[in-house]
Amino acid sequence: RRRWADSHAQDPPGPAVELAVSDALLPVVQGFALSAALIIAIGAQNAFVLQQGLKRNHVAACWLTAAACDAVLISLGVGGVGAVIGQVPWLGMGAAWAGAIFLLWYGFRSFRSAFKANALDTADGVVAASLGATVVGVLAVSLLNPHAILDTVVLIGGAGAQYPVADRPLFAVGAMAASFTWFFALAFGAARLAPLFRRPVTWRVLDTLVGCLMWAIAASLMLGPGGLSRPL
Image (tube, rainbow, N blue to C red):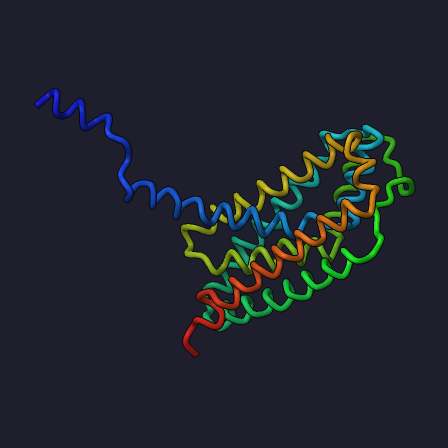
């Protein structure tokens, strides 16, 4: 009996365990993908973080502040607004459709930007000379930015509301991980990436990828439980 138990104790996990792990990771991956698609774009927040990275001005504080702001907004969206939307079925369906429409427009804008010779200009702007000024600057471009609030609280929060209550924290963790990863790469890799990000072709590739991802997410919202597949 002991030999039988020892041999079976070393058996690899069965298909049921692997399926459970895959299901648990799905909200994390989808949260990461949606957050990454929303934050990887030319904007005030990215421009400020990249600028501070180029000038090596309190890079760690800049990264942590920007990512923490996103984390707070994502928590509010998934745990607050998302929870309210999830309690009212028609609000959840409306949020799914509103998010899908916005994502379709956002994807269209990304494809349109891909055909323009846009580049991220980091030569101008406000230079934060102190730690306090840097933190205040990041807070301003993060919390006083309507686009950032719309992306994190409304879109990510609305998408998180489509998940069961137990899966919403996993979705939020994935979304936060994307924010921390992106701002870390942007802030600490700015010195090496600056020449690349100043080239229009780089942003054309990014805009094209973001546009494809936006439209894919919009399709999943429309065809998911809160969209076309839901009985009226």
